[in-house]
Image (cartoon, rainbow, N blue to C red; front, side, top):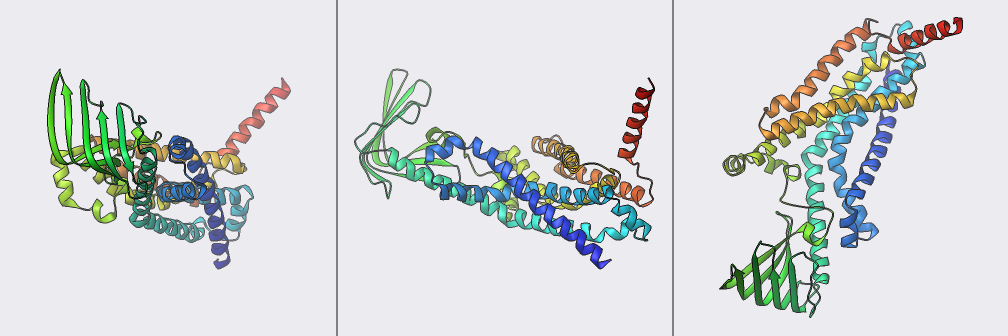
Length: 390
């Protein structure tokens, strides 16, 4: 039995790491296509690009971990079923329940790995991704604003600086013409200014000091002096491809996610954001525990498909996960909109799949699980005999 458990565990582990690597590669390739405009706009080198995708990886790994665990268990038992190893083990007195310690222990390790990502690694990766992108964008913007040149890269805005320090971002003799507001033209003149990034809101800031603003609207001109004036530029107005926006709940650290005082304040000012925070708290638990739930769910299904090819098994496992993920996304959407409590919306798929898995496990242990491929093959053979007679 110890040898059997070790062999099962090692086979699960090999398939798991292979699945994780392949799925993560495909997801990052798709993400690279979405971010291509930003990557080209920031003129990143290979090292910066790899570092940015490394920061994005934890967020995707949290989603990939359950499906990789599910694939590893499903394909292992499918191969054993196809090679008649399950029949041989049962003939030797080994029941299905006696084979469960290895896959269950493996799924628990996967869940613990998911919790590590959820509690620490995800917020670390998303926070560093935001900081790195905005830092590079701020440095690039300093280069874009060349001294003595009227810059028109930002739509509906003209920027001019007599002197620009590309290292510190300080500017002298600054003029900004802002036409972003409808039917309004604002001209801002300031002797000093600087360029920085607002990491919380995902914006590039031109901070002007000791100047004046001239606002023309409806054929009227108003003049205002200021000590400091911030011209805020959204990230996508400078670099196409991605809108950073304010910090999202998926980027929150665990401590910030459980800041109940902030949540109560948001329930008055931004109730949808408050609901998103509650949903995110549940997601940090649901995805890791899905490793154990999906492991239990697929074992009886794998034992019922004898003679099925590995490629078909992969497609079938992906289809089953798609059903689970669709139900989970529906629960997340309903939870964020307030139409359904997050406790029900996010935990119902796990509960349903767990109950189905336990029921299927009981049927499989009692040899009552239907042999789907055998029925399909017998139907094909009968149909072929009829065609031959005809």
